[in-house]
Each structure stands twice: as C-alpha cells, then as structure tokens.
Length: 404
Image (cartoon, rainbow, N blue to C red; front, side):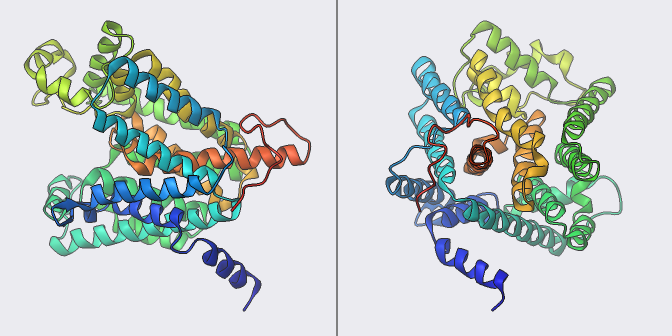
C-alpha cells in the first residue's frame, strides 16, 4: 500500500460512519429529492434535523474546550437577541438554534478531517447533481432552445427543485475546478447546459468565483480577484436594473421599509407570513417595482433582503459575521490547499448567491459550511501563531491542539 493510500485509510478509519461524516451525508440528502421521503408519517427532512442535532450534541459533549470564533459568537448572540425582542415562533427559533449547533460542531474538526470532509462534500454534491440531471433527461429530453423552464418544471413531479439542483451543480463545478479535475468539469458543463441557461444567480455567482480563482492562482493576486468578484456581481445587478430584469427589487424595497418602520425587524421566518397577510396592499404599494405579469413573492427570493426584513439593523452584524471569515480566507487564498480552497469558494457561493436567492441560508448545509470556513480561519491563524507571524484573533487557546 502506497503512502497516499495509507493516509486515506487512516483518515477513513477515524471518521468513517462518525458523527461529522453522518451529519454531512444527512445535510446533502436534504438538498435532494430524498428529503421528500416519508417514513411512518415522518419526513426524511425532519428525521435528518433531529439526527444531525443529536450527533452534533454528541460531538460537543466529547470536547470540553470551547472554540471561540467571533463571527459565530456574533451570529449566535443576534439570534438569541432576536428571540427576546421579536418572540418568533418557538419552532422556528429552535430550528435555527439546532442548525447553529450543527454548524458549530464542525469547528471541532481537525485539519486532516476538514480535508477529508471537503472531498466528501465535493463528490457527494457532484454525484447528486449528476443523478438529478440524468433523471431529468430520462423524463424528457430538453428542448433545443434557450428556454428550459418547462423542462426543469417537470422535475417537480419527482422532487427535483431547480434552486436546490442549481446550488448542488454550482458546488460541484467549484469542487472540480479547485481540485483541477477539468475533464470531469467539462462533462458536467455539457450535461448541465439546460440548467445553466435558466439559473442566472448560480451562473453569475459561480462565474465570479471562478474569475477570482483564476486571478488569484494565475496572477498570484487574491486582492485583485476579490475586487473582480464585487465588480462582476455589481455590474450584473446594475445591468439587470437598467434592463428592468432584476425581479428581486420589490423584495429589497419591502425589506428596507420594514426595517425603517421597525428597526429590530419582524423576526426570523416572519416575512412569508407578512406577505401572505398583506398581499393585496403590498401588490398595490410596490407595483412600480413589478413588471407586467409579475407578482409579489411570498418569500424574499434574496438572503440579504430576508435578513434585512427579519433582523432590521441587526442584519448588518449578521452579514458581517458571514463575510469577515470569507474575506480573511479570500485575501490569504494562496496559503490554502486545494480542498480548503473548495470550501472557501463554496462559502463564497452561498454568500454571494444571496443577492438573488433565499433558499440557501435557511438550511443546515449553510451553517455546516459556515462552521468549516471558521475552522479554516482558526487553523490558519494557529499556523501563523506557531510561526510567530500574527496574533490569533479568534481563539484564546491558540496554541492548544484540538482533541479527538
């Protein structure tokens, strides 16, 4: 057995069927049609929620030390503050707390485990995307046009949702690029072409991140790549506004007005209830933001609009908590290995796609990726402290190793 095979077997022996790996598998299953399965009148999605939380608590119970990640602490504090101020539905609050605990458990993963989990994520999402795309081809062949919406809608009958499939597909492309598997990436691009022409948000965000990756690795300039991300995405938003095609504008307008009327926001997951209860009034008041034939969405269709409406002025703290570790990783992108680069790009996808998508930040998958990103920041700062380069900003016990 060669050295790489021995290393793989050793890592597999540590976490195979372990809590972190099991949580990861359950989180990916939630993004596939399997989440719609029912067992004894209980959906797989609910079973996954309870199972992931139980496993996360098991992990935390075995680790006496607390890992202090300031972005995670800020996010947790705002979540509890929102509960005290807005008193949302207790179930919504407990679900969010459960996801926070699940994500936090990934802060405890060692560097070797993070690498293994990153590869698992990459292959799981790639396999999931391919299976769903092949299933769509089996149902019917896509039309020879740039309008594939009718073809993708057929996937609803078997539980394939375009938003979730687009996210898995984008994740898989980023993994294949970061791991330099270009032939597999080309195959996936050809297979998913009908999805590409219909997933504007995913394509724009993935394209911006690929531009960053090429600039950072090719020109050795992560800072220039970061500038290009914001330039590309802001240009696309401005172009959409100019053409009147940015159909999330009314959501931002409603969210901003809600924050101005109630600076603390309306509470977690309250936006759909608000729009349903005031649908006619909102349609009349914000008709200027709608194109002919458009309607007010019950959901915000944007993570940022949802955060603004739900948390008000506290949304600034949440957005900063999400972005600060991403910025730290992007600026120091060249210091990370390929598996770590994929996790950075993956979190970048979940963050920036929030401009025009709202489904990603309300799931366990989002908080798992956030936990892994904070883990990367802590690991990097520990390496820097070990070599006497910079003080550790996240962890007071910087020189202490994880216990496994």
